[in-house]
Length: 159
Image 1 (spheres, helix red, strand yellow):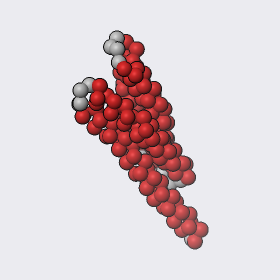
Image 2: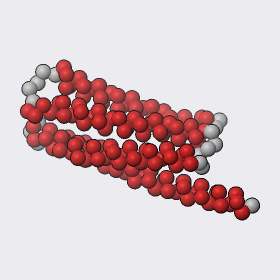
Image 3: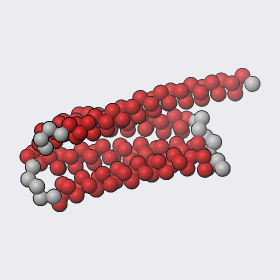
Image 4: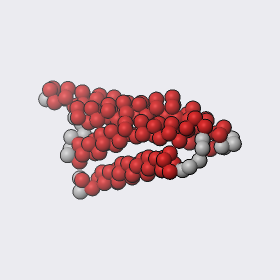
């Protein structure tokens, strides 16, 4: 029963990983097999940016799976969980930086190349904003978990 409590979250992490793999595959297909001439070789820029953001993304997913394993093993209130949350936070910040510095100008260029379709820019803003929200949320969760661990260890020492 304890292992089943995190099964939905594990499925969500696996689904997120599969989704990113599909996105990487589609971007690679567009870059290598679509024979459309594009200025600035925009398909290769998108490929590099997507793969650069995918690396910390998959590291964060791996850390999320480790964190769910700690929860299943009743080690949720441990320094290992705090380290996993810290790594997820760092990865989310890296993804935010990549998508903000590289992704938003990329989507802006796509908007002007494809004839003012603002949906592309909205996609970039959503990706960047969601990475920022994940970074903020994991930072808050890490701090709360560290405070709970400190209170627990203080209570263990008083008794």
